[in-house]
Image (cartoon, rainbow, N blue to C red; front, side, top):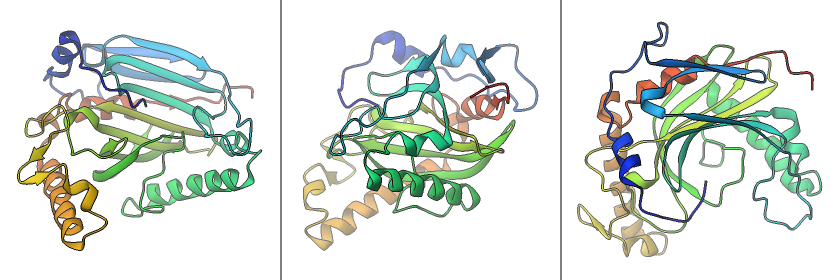
Length: 277
């Protein structure tokens, strides 16, 4: 996830406007493409997500205890799709769970924090209403904050399970917009060996693409006052609730792309036992 903003190209906007029927989780559509790479396989609708790039990303450990952990992670498999924006792309990443905390071993506090996040995510999967320190844990470091979670539900894939949810992230202060709206999956394989995180950018008609200065009576300036003045904090919470309530009441087809396209891809995901780590 990157924090630089750039206007999306007309081609990407056209791709985001696709409103195709969602494929069944149990019966592939004629548009589905099978993907196999190393020990990972899945099916996806190429008409929705475009071409996929597959890569093995090298491990990167924390070098100094006081370093910012940008990019710190064990070696992992990454699948990125053409559907995306400058700040968010559609992707699936598969990591070995036990190696995640080890990447932070030079800083024992960060190593412990990562272990707690893994445990916290497992709790969220068992009880989707649970939050670990107010968040649904995302193990790779992000210099960003999730503003809310809605449409949270437990969701199985071929040999594991996790949670699906709509979220919105910001780097700094910003009102809710389609630019940073995501449908995300976080989960583990049944054998506990692998952690999977996946997401796709989504958009809805009632939100602007770029963060606005004012939206339905709420102004950008309120963000700076929300945690200093109780009345502003209440107003901000009301604003977020109004957004999440509307998102929750929409049908999957009211999002672009249709949420069920992403769900079908995740449901088909299989991380095999052929990896000889």
